[in-house]
Length: 223
Image (cartoon, rainbow, N blue to C red):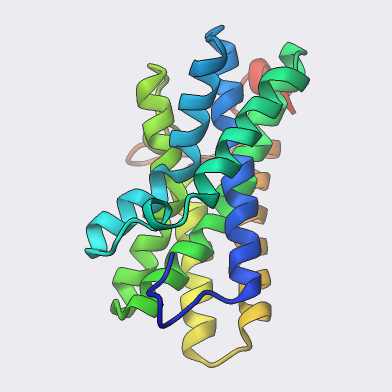
């Protein structure tokens, strides 16, 4: 996901491929809720896995990475098929979708920000591209499955991605070693998202900035 002259580090590649896999699983498990066939699993899984990075590359005017190196595409297909054949329990599917999505969100915020910085984007644009990378695939997944997008219904979702991306860009600006910056940024985003899932933290309307513990019994049962 970078220019040929500036290859990604091993650690960024590792979390990028991890993010591809877990986001593809979250997409496939969403397809399971609608009882799609194997092609539906693969389609939704792949779109979730590569949708955010594709959107980022198009906005930056870069060559879309997976059109030159299909490894990400293959990885998403394999992950979606694995979810189709081996995750069959409904509750496990729901839990798996929620937590795999949280993991993908956390790592893709860092990857997207890193790619944008490496491409020469200004600080604020790089932070925004981190959020786009982290949320784009999930947004497309939800639209295609006629599900209310988490980014639009008060979930602490884009905020968590934005926080992780901002932490990474800031630590990189202050020359913290790459691996340390990546780990701290991923932990920041995941901690926020996990807290929101466990404690029902949501962004409220005007006059009620944050809601805590009002997620309802359905979400509690999903944890």
